[in-house]
Length: 394
Image 1: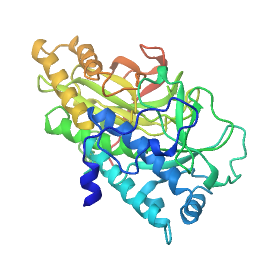
Image 2: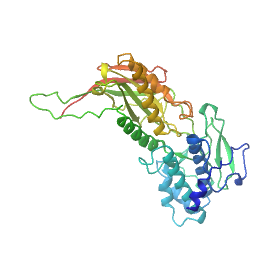
Image 3: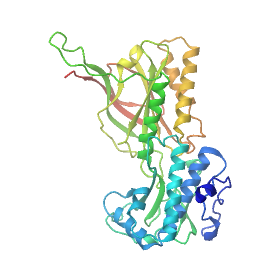
Image 4: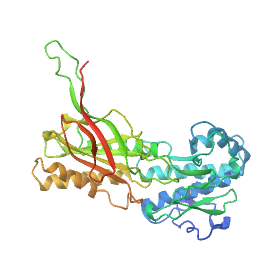
């Protein structure tokens, strides 16, 4: 309890580095809750977590557990899992482990997904392109970095720590020539939990229909239970917006339109976990639109990229308020479909998507029953092939 009480003090963590190497005492051994809201807390938590992991590398048992976890093809491990692996940790490692678990809890609470996720913080190994991925570096000698705060286009340096807690600055734009450990939020888990929260909130607000159910076939009505959908057959991105420190992209779609029997918007958030890298064509065969939920046989599909600082409660509230305001001004008509998509973009201020590149593209007014071959989005950053697909009753 004494640690938690200290942790809740509102004193800002040490400032950013201004030289390639900075003394270890610039970072306090105790975490202090920062002022500045959601973005500040997540960014400070990542920084403090990276510093703690770097200091723990001096414990042979921790370094051994980390080496074992990162020895295979999977170059990432959840921090909580890693901490459970450490046998006979030193007193410093035990103290750091308590702090890391507390930080994980605080981040999940601030992102409104404590109910939906048990762990978010991870450590992953960055291996330079062309270097033997099977080679096993000495974990105790690696730098530990974290993704910087602020706009991605303005990143110049990446702060990294050695096991003494000293800071070294890496180039944000040029990938390092040596392996680096990166501590941050597991974007895959964050997205999974966040999408669950947002969709649950949209349903509670009356802005998302219940998913259709396939009814059994009968002799008298062979097609009565079939479900009309649009399927994503192929997708590629011209730019996935990520740097070496961020890793693979995590993308989600918001499908929107007007409900079939009410003057309300219909929104559905769809996870796209396979869409990792720009310049690669993916063939997911993923259902994107259930047409029974949309009036006028038309819907929008908009792509966004995961951001560590997203507060899913605020996002759900903003989406609900923004699209509800649009439908309150315009009588339901075909033209409103595009207005709903505009309202979605307006619901996402830079304060939540602080990296500033998280909007990828929009596909407006996708029509029911129509095939779209190599169809470019409005921002010219994504290309999709969409086709009608009928889910058959069994």
